[in-house]
Length: 620
Image 1 (spheres, rainbow, N blue to C red):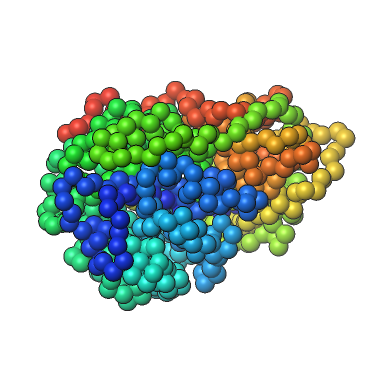
Image 2: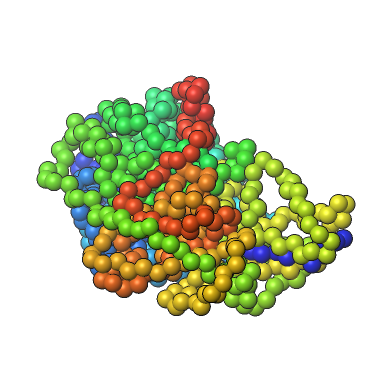
């Protein structure tokens, strides 16, 4: 969003997998998934990004004719699995109040059907809050159009929106419940609610009653929390599970879980194989030995385990979330997660090590692993200046500005994502200018808080700027439709000036290029560029922040590209500084770790914390 003041003188699913040692039978009751079974019969699970974030070869892009590729090739080899877990992000399916989208990559029913064809059972996690390092934890930002709303509580305004959403979503799921002949065997209520400040049992009871009213009494409902969240996150009548990583004290945590769930199997519903990345921190990595040892210990105990993540993914577009750990920490575009299967769908040494552990407890599939997807590299390519952002203001905001005495937030002007003031430890920014000059402020949503304290994370100018002792008033606010403009450009070429001026401020660059042959996946490298957004053939790949790191490349799935000599178009909106030679390259390997900052290491148990690895909590 662009705010302008004339008186300076005075804007899918995350999926997991669980493996039973014996087949689930039709007609069993709601305790079957988590029911008591003989010791030594652990169940294994895996989690990966889902619907809109699945690698293109598997689901997302209609240009690819094999949506079952992920289900029918690598999973049977790697997992022996017949279950997967999936989030359903509310804000992905209801972008505006009462406007629902279940088409294309958002087609939840088609996704469930494809899983059914592959003989996969489903454990669903519909929220309403999901975390998942997803924008606002899956809650729609339009909720904040009511500034006084209390999210994830029994606030009538919040419950009304939740009820409206679930009365659309849950009836769609009802025919897919296992006892109705479908493949959904269990559903999670909320997500890590005990890590939220409210601890509102009225809200949790309302959700449980709503799920029962719309889904019936035969489906198993459960909760998941970190060990410190069990007190406020568990609820009588819902099966209680816990989540933790390999550095945490398994014995202590499972003993605590038994206080809340005295019967049935012990379940680690999120066993962390890696960790997320923040801009400005190192690429998170978790050692193979730690992950395999933790898994082995749980399987020896006979516990059920879901690995989060099993398959890395990508926060395309503006869908990344953020954390608040004393300062604002936006999450990177890459969600590779140091997972056993990489962001691009390739097996890693961690996958083979985990299979070796699993083979000690049950037979594993024989035969060769499907090969990694083909990768390609080409370039460098020179980008050409299209013009600065203000040049396109009439196209970006065709209906003109919104006038207000004081600046308004993104939510107030119904601008969810697009809008650079960096939010960090500083609360003041000092500027100099001439009397009578116009002050233009470009505001960017770097991701709304997605865990713990994600309460009403408004975006925009939350307080009016002050000139000396004078509050600046009479603002013009321009909600910017950047994606719409880029899609309008594609596949058209805009005329360029024969004498382009030196760029100043946020600037658009683009070029076109052919790809000969069949090609493959690739990784966009932007050496020397600073920070911005990038589109390939009109598709928003996400944010780059080369100077901040750690991520230096953006994953480009093959189905986004045109082959056989057809022209592809790449568009950049560079927000800060353009390199002397505005070039880009496409690499056959990612660069995900290029920063000097310290990594945040996840641990839930204080007694296992290493002094050199500061405990920093997040959630999923």
